Amino acid sequence: MALTRDQIVDAALEVAGDYGLGDLSMRRVAGELGVQAGALYWHVANKQELLIALSRRILDPSSGAHAWPTEPREILLDFRSRLLSVRDGAEIVAVAHADSPAELAPVPQLAAGLDGGHGAWAMAQAKVLARWAIGSVLAQQTAQSLTAAAPSEQTTAAAVEAQFELDFQQGLICLLPGATGAQEQPSPESA
Image 1 (cartoon, rainbow, N blue to C red):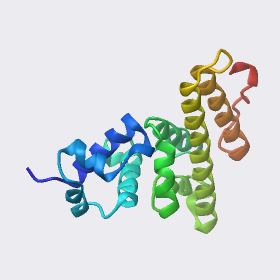
Image 2 (cartoon, rainbow, N blue to C red; image 1 turned 180 degrees about the horizontal axis):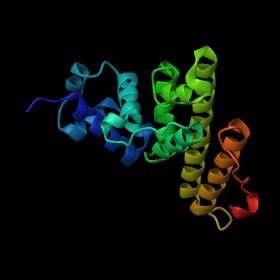
Image 3 (cartoon, rainbow, N blue to C red; image 1 turned 90 degrees about the vertical axis):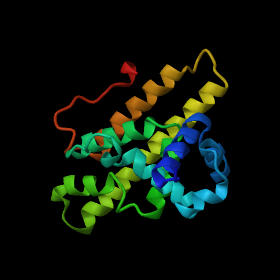
């Protein structure tokens, strides 16, 4: 049976989920597939291209995820959820966003939902919002890793998750005042 790009991306996603991005290598992915690392290079030129393919898999509705919402607030909540669904998801997607942010979800979806999606200004806003969301999730995933490595009575995984959820909701209120409607501002006591 011939090796396919989809098989490589599936194996890389599994390695990233099991071991984290720090231990994701072409050699480890090849080992998961039972092939030599050189066999991967027929399908992906390098690790950066593999990370971009992984990002697309995490974010692309054609890969099994549900379609993107149309409202900016809902798009950002969905984006956050997709990033959190994969270990080191924010770090993986950050690589692809650094390479081609205008082409990778959710930037086009956000631009379309912001001010009618007209012009360079909507695209600039969309890129900034996507980068903010990536940074927020990256901080959360880092905090969760630190908490898992050295748990304490004061900092539990649930407390970290609740605090970052609150921070994200407050960030949406600050960054998207028109998109939050008449929602009540979350209070720190609710975390």
